[in-house]
Length: 356
Image 1 (tube, rainbow, N blue to C red):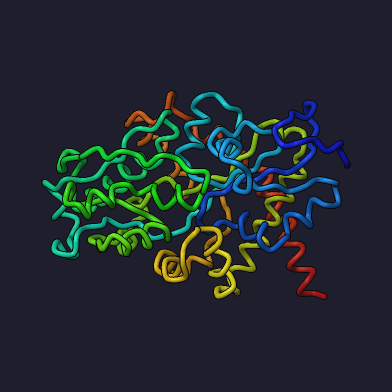
Image 2 (cartoon, one colour; image 1 turned 180 degrees about the vertical axis):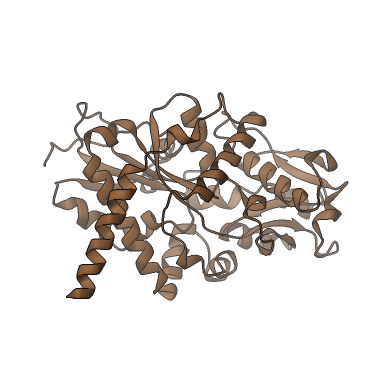
């Protein structure tokens, strides 16, 4: 199958594709690894389809990461914009869920020292301002969910802290700069304007070191996943309904390559960390600190009952706190068929490979 090539942003006739677009968050993702290893490009070259990453495009095009309104787009990214887009009526479907325990922490000043969750009571906590849209208010949603999880460990609620709005940093053309600026509460913490701030990921580790603040509560140190449900946990892989209806086999093949990349990551941690420095815009120390606990063995997408239940928890939280225009029926949002086929093909391939 070969279609005429169009420039990025032009619309192909209904049901036709001229390229595969994919987008992922700056975190460990099987799709990002498959792209870095060249496997996505190889897979779809035989169809005459280019594979293009939105992260490599100008900022105006990168906005589609949240909107999911481009033909042929695969998105492995945070659940806040994915749920917000679905709540607005965009016909997307979840075809897989991942769970990657990247650093989630409550930062404090050094003189405060490491604290227990119960000691959050009465503190001033940074809360990033609302963005232009509800679904675009990712930093605010993450912070609110992260603080709620930390408070819940001690049986406390959001009413037990004082939230202090902190302004958002102006957007930049540089994705690395935007990521570093996401945690604007760190500056307020270092300046003594707040007492605690929620952060996650490798870029936050680097930003905390630069600001001279420390981890007060390491949320990854607590066993219940319910306390760590947030924008990236679980992280959905979504496609448009049109892509599923008209190009089902392409969707399956995309998932096959993510499963292949996840298998590779299990046995190639040093090389994986090198890829992640580029994917996360972080240094080696930030990557090693943020991604621990054998994270490289859990990059495979699935649609287990546990992950679906955790996504429902997040959807209910976002609806309750005003991040969604309507509630989302998570069960109806999920289409299990492509992952089931991809897993069957992958199992057959690996069995045949061993037999050979």
